[in-house]
Image (tube, rainbow, N blue to C red; front, side, top):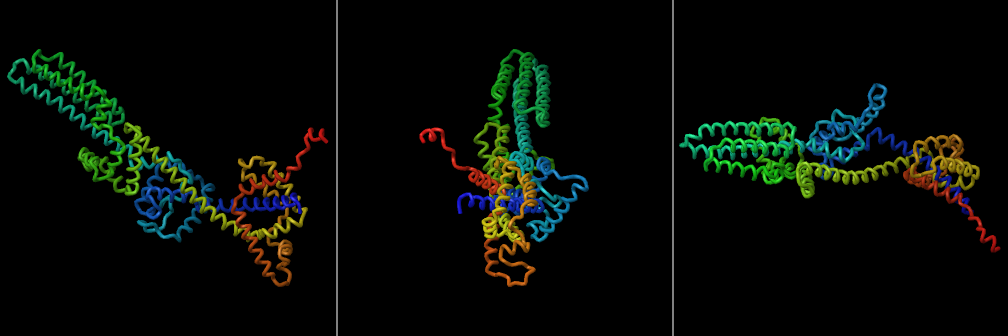
Length: 512
């Protein structure tokens, strides 16, 4: 026995396991498709992400929140289903099998009957969701952008009313102090008319902001411009006396103190809520919630109703996670627009990390399924590892045939890292038409394997059958290793086998 012989036997055994692994992967892929294991595992992983642990992932509020996230158009667009009778027919068949399988499961808590993991009216779901899509869908489901806008609107409304009240107080004080002066009635009438214009401008700015036609900085700038026009008008029309001059200085002070630095005014007035405050809106005990509900006043309004829908829907675990993620986001940003983007990034990062762990769980589960399929295939195909080694050791013609076919397969797939499994399957089918592998339950193979055939009236060899079981176990584990593993190993063995003795260099020949 020499090294080339051992390599040929190893090459034959590896090639057989490559073919069987391709068949096993086809079976596993078919089963995973029928039962939608990837999509279902992703959905379960998202429920665990929302709940914080697997124990609470089946709570009704968690499942309902996950259903709403999956109902988002961004995620629904990922799950493209075929249309047309002929195209949908195979899917209906797999849905029926999956529904029958899930019918043996207990109903989820909060539900009267067992339904699809994707919801009562959905038969399937996406097998993969990008992190940015999930983050955006979650934030839209919880209405975080909308609540941010509404909270900003309420604060801008309060700021507008406060500013107008301060201007109005100046006018009232001027009126009270100059009531005995005959020159003031005409001037005060002019002042009130101008103030009415300021009120109209401020109201228009507030309305434009509510309609998302302008942003917060532009709103403050327009209010400042309106106040500038009023101050100029006031200065042009006022009589030259101390009371009017004092009122003008107070108006100019408001302009300088409140509107001179827009960003500073927004920050001091808390007009732009930070993301921490937005997240605290769903906490009924927080000051932000009390401020917001007091500003809304009308409990029948759509904003108030939507807020309470979010509060009722939001599980405590999700609220706590959002609070932590909001803290992280807030330390990295300065304004709300950036905060929302950073919060989205924090959710994306958390989602990616969770999915990495979920992917590891899925791979372990898939490995267990691969072992079961490998053992089943080893028994079904009678792939006895011990018998295959024996046949390859004794049958030189079989070794040569397998070696040649293995070399041809490698020649057509030179790069193992870019191997196309579909091409490998087609090539394996061609090989099976040319080579009689030492597997199967045929009389010829059983005679060679254990010296017994069903048609012959002989005592069944029990002890040899035990060796068959051992051979099946070895083959089952080998098949579960997967086709990529065996193809990569096949390439390495062929390279070693084809490497001969290095030729003598010209310098060595000259020495001799």
